[in-house]
Image (cartoon, rainbow, N blue to C red; front, side, top):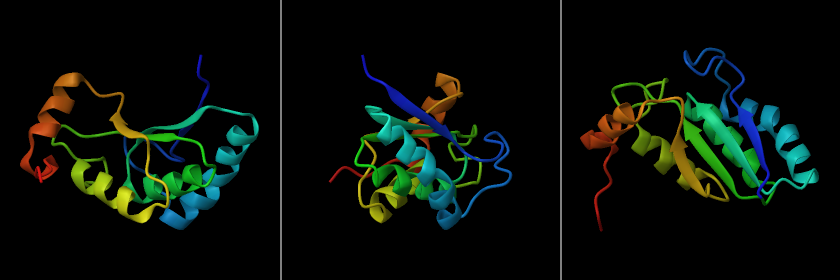
Length: 129
């Protein structure tokens, strides 16, 4: 059995209201990440993240614990986060600006048909190198 520490955005994940900046998110989510690490959680999970800025700050806070972590996005029908960032751009940005990359990325609270449509958008596809 694995024990995960579930975290989420500060505001409304379905509207991306009260979105935190990267710095605010790091500060806001660091204490919770640290408490989960002290409690010996096996991994951290950020659910339904609607905005890139808060996802970056949260990823940095979770990465500082040394625990593996997962970022899960809330996406719209057009394949973008609620704040309008493409899935591709969100993943690329977080991977490039954090010291420790997430274990994986997910979506949640979204129908599988929406995810399939989102991933079929050309702006969400990564070229195979």
